[in-house]
Length: 123
Image (cartoon, rainbow, N blue to C red; front, side):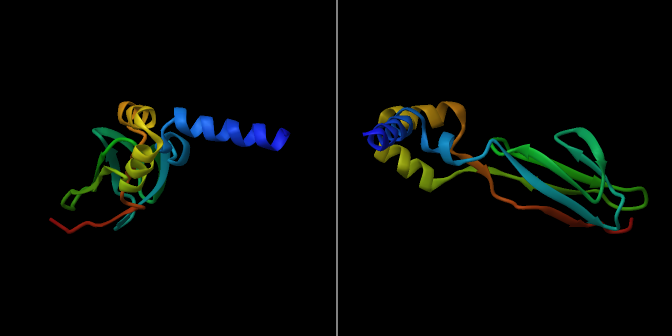
Protein backbone atom coordinates (compact mmCIF):
# COMPACT_ATOMS: atom_id res chain seq x y z
CA UNK A 1 0.00 0.00 0.00
CA UNK A 2 2.84 2.38 0.88
CA UNK A 3 4.48 1.73 -2.51
CA UNK A 4 1.21 2.55 -4.25
CA UNK A 5 0.87 5.89 -2.40
CA UNK A 6 4.41 6.78 -3.40
CA UNK A 7 3.65 5.93 -7.04
CA UNK A 8 0.47 8.00 -7.00
CA UNK A 9 2.38 10.93 -5.53
CA UNK A 10 4.95 10.75 -8.33
CA UNK A 11 2.21 10.58 -10.99
CA UNK A 12 0.39 13.55 -9.42
CA UNK A 13 3.64 15.53 -9.32
CA UNK A 14 4.23 14.88 -13.00
CA UNK A 15 0.68 15.94 -13.89
CA UNK A 16 0.88 19.17 -11.89
CA UNK A 17 4.44 20.16 -12.74
CA UNK A 18 5.67 20.31 -16.29
CA UNK A 19 8.09 17.71 -17.57
CA UNK A 20 10.70 20.41 -18.13
CA UNK A 21 10.37 21.40 -14.50
CA UNK A 22 11.03 17.82 -13.45
CA UNK A 23 13.67 16.74 -15.98
CA UNK A 24 15.65 19.83 -17.09
CA UNK A 25 18.24 21.50 -14.86
CA UNK A 26 17.97 25.23 -14.17
CA UNK A 27 21.66 25.76 -14.95
CA UNK A 28 24.36 24.22 -17.09
CA UNK A 29 28.11 24.19 -16.52
CA UNK A 30 29.86 25.56 -19.61
CA UNK A 31 33.65 25.37 -20.12
CA UNK A 32 35.05 28.48 -21.84
CA UNK A 33 38.46 28.45 -23.52
CA UNK A 34 40.39 30.36 -26.14
CA UNK A 35 43.54 30.19 -28.19
CA UNK A 36 45.53 32.12 -27.08
CA UNK A 37 44.59 31.68 -23.43
CA UNK A 38 43.98 34.55 -21.00
CA UNK A 39 41.33 36.19 -23.19
CA UNK A 40 38.84 38.29 -21.28
CA UNK A 41 35.39 36.70 -21.12
CA UNK A 42 32.35 38.99 -21.29
CA UNK A 43 28.97 37.30 -20.86
CA UNK A 44 25.83 39.26 -21.67
CA UNK A 45 27.84 42.50 -21.30
CA UNK A 46 29.44 41.64 -17.94
CA UNK A 47 33.14 40.79 -17.57
CA UNK A 48 33.45 37.37 -15.91
CA UNK A 49 37.20 36.64 -15.96
CA UNK A 50 39.76 35.17 -18.34
CA UNK A 51 40.10 31.88 -20.16
CA UNK A 52 40.26 29.06 -19.44
CA UNK A 53 37.31 29.05 -17.06
CA UNK A 54 34.07 27.25 -16.35
CA UNK A 55 30.81 29.01 -15.51
CA UNK A 56 27.36 27.87 -14.47
CA UNK A 57 24.84 29.61 -16.72
CA UNK A 58 21.07 29.69 -16.86
CA UNK A 59 19.77 26.86 -19.01
CA UNK A 60 16.62 28.87 -19.78
CA UNK A 61 18.19 31.94 -21.40
CA UNK A 62 20.40 32.50 -24.43
CA UNK A 63 23.82 34.04 -23.74
CA UNK A 64 26.25 36.06 -25.81
CA UNK A 65 29.86 35.38 -24.85
CA UNK A 66 32.59 37.66 -26.15
CA UNK A 67 36.27 36.76 -25.99
CA UNK A 68 38.71 39.66 -26.28
CA UNK A 69 42.44 40.14 -25.87
CA UNK A 70 44.71 43.03 -26.71
CA UNK A 71 46.27 42.59 -30.16
CA UNK A 72 43.54 40.15 -31.28
CA UNK A 73 40.15 40.50 -32.92
CA UNK A 74 37.24 39.87 -30.56
CA UNK A 75 35.12 36.81 -31.24
CA UNK A 76 31.65 35.89 -30.08
CA UNK A 77 30.17 32.55 -29.06
CA UNK A 78 26.38 32.45 -28.98
CA UNK A 79 24.74 30.00 -26.57
CA UNK A 80 21.11 29.55 -27.62
CA UNK A 81 18.42 28.25 -25.32
CA UNK A 82 15.98 26.27 -27.43
CA UNK A 83 12.74 24.51 -26.70
CA UNK A 84 13.20 20.77 -26.25
CA UNK A 85 10.74 18.98 -28.54
CA UNK A 86 10.75 15.90 -26.30
CA UNK A 87 9.70 17.92 -23.26
CA UNK A 88 6.88 19.59 -25.23
CA UNK A 89 5.58 16.20 -26.37
CA UNK A 90 5.64 14.90 -22.79
CA UNK A 91 3.85 18.05 -21.61
CA UNK A 92 1.14 17.61 -24.25
CA UNK A 93 0.68 13.97 -23.23
CA UNK A 94 0.48 15.10 -19.59
CA UNK A 95 -2.32 17.57 -20.27
CA UNK A 96 -2.86 21.30 -20.28
CA UNK A 97 -1.43 22.10 -16.82
CA UNK A 98 2.14 20.80 -17.46
CA UNK A 99 2.16 22.58 -20.82
CA UNK A 100 1.17 25.89 -19.20
CA UNK A 101 3.67 25.46 -16.33
CA UNK A 102 6.65 24.80 -18.62
CA UNK A 103 5.64 27.54 -21.07
CA UNK A 104 5.26 30.11 -18.27
CA UNK A 105 8.51 29.20 -16.50
CA UNK A 106 10.63 28.55 -19.60
CA UNK A 107 11.51 25.15 -18.15
CA UNK A 108 11.21 23.45 -21.52
CA UNK A 109 14.29 25.32 -22.75
CA UNK A 110 17.91 24.23 -22.53
CA UNK A 111 21.24 25.45 -23.87
CA UNK A 112 22.26 23.72 -27.10
CA UNK A 113 26.04 24.10 -26.70
CA UNK A 114 28.19 22.15 -24.26
CA UNK A 115 31.14 24.59 -24.40
CA UNK A 116 32.65 27.64 -26.10
CA UNK A 117 36.19 27.19 -27.41
CA UNK A 118 37.24 30.07 -29.63
CA UNK A 119 40.24 30.87 -31.83
CA UNK A 120 41.28 34.55 -31.72
CA UNK A 121 42.99 36.02 -34.79
CA UNK A 122 45.71 38.64 -34.57
CA UNK A 123 44.75 42.12 -35.71
